[in-house]
Structure formats: C-alpha cells, structure tokens
Image (cartoon, rainbow, N blue to C red):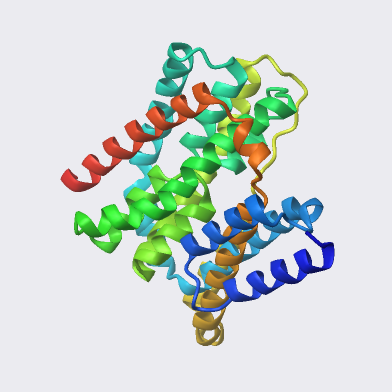
Length: 307
C-alpha cells in the first residue's frame, strides 16, 4: 500500500476512535484489523506513545473518583488481591512445568496474569534477564487473552447480572492489562470503572515486591527495579478531586477526556500487534496462559458471587 495512503487511513481511524461512536473493544478490534491488513505507519513510535498515553489517561481517570470510595474499594480487594497473586504464581509454575513451557517465558506469563499484564512483564523481564523472544512470547500471550477479555467480560457480567461493584472487582483481578480492565469496566458502567481502576492500580503496586522476589528466585543481583510512579499521580488526582472544589468542577471533563484516551490507547495497542507477533507465540505458552487465566477468572468470580 502507498505510504501516504496508509498514513491517511491510520490517522482517520485514530480520529474516529476519539469519537463516542467507537467503544474500547471496537477500538482494539479496529487496531488489530489495521495491523493485519493495512500496517502501522508509525510503528517505531507506538511503544512509547502507548505507554505515555495509557499512564496519562489513568491519572486523568483519578479526577472522576472520590477518595473515600477508592479507599473502600482498595480495602475490599486487598486480601483477594494477595491470595490471587500468590495462587496465580503457584499455578503458573505448575502449568508451565505441565505444558513444558520454557522457564522464563512461563514465569513472565504467570507474572503478567498475576498482576497487570504487559507492565508486570516489562518490569520483571530485565530483572530475570529474559531475552527478546521470551518477552515477545509472553507479551503476545497476554495480549491475545486481554483482547478476548475486553469483549467477553462485559457480556458475562450482564448475563450474570453482576452489580457494578462486583464487576469492577472481578475485572480488576481477572483481566491482565490495566488498559483492558478500564476498557471492559468502562463499558459496564462508571461505578464499575472507578472500582476496577482503583483495585487494579493497587494490585499493580505488587510489581515492586514481585520484582525483588524475582531477583532472589533467578539469582539476578545488581538489577534495577522499575517503580510505577504514575500510580502516585493517580492517587494525587483522586485526592485533589475529592477535597478541592475548583478541581471537582473540572473533574467530569477530565474524566471523560481520559476515557477517550484509553480508547485511543487500545487502538494503538491493537495496531501494533502484527501477524508475525501472533505467529511467534506458539501453542504451549497460549495453553498455559488460557488455563491459568480460566482458573483465576472462575475462582475470582465465585468468590465475588458468594462473598
């Protein structure tokens, strides 16, 4: 395809995704279709752009939340977070051995499932000295499952008549990446979105102890641990929105703009996932990821329903 035409189509779709006509799942699907049939004309910029847009959007969502509600959501999800992280890592290790997945690849898939998808993989990978192929396979596995979750979780939630709070808690625990959690919860409702975002970002803080554990487990001394500083800005945004009236008046507009930013993020994530990326994943890592994901999703759902 002509490079100029490719750029025009890509920018046009990006603009369309910024309108209310496109939901987060539709944006992700559009991005995937672009990657398969048109190609990403700015692929070399995609990684950094997606990272910054995601973080800025997450911080912006804090301006639509209340500190008391956020604190309550964090308390409710704390022990479930601890139990599911430990359980996911244990089951991930067992399934990795069962399906004979390469050790570091298996560990990255487990950490991505346990905490926050690609962000956890990006933080842990250099600590355990994973190579590019191991990282790509783990990211590909998590991305594929994230894409599925973004479509089926709102449907399952509606089918089971889950409340906004129950769906928010479930999606925060059982969906890998923050972007997909926000996308699915945002489709379900604003209350679900607030709870899901708070619980997910609280969960993301576990990247830090997990990274230090990884140093010990893989005997990787001297490696630096990446700390997700943007979570602190998210908390600050919630506090400002709760206690400063002038900020409160601006909050709804910032919140709405941030939801649009998350939709654009999902489009960019999808458009960066080529056929080559999908083909590189392989069957065994996908099988490990699916089984692990089903276990964590079903068990968390049962706890939410019966809790």
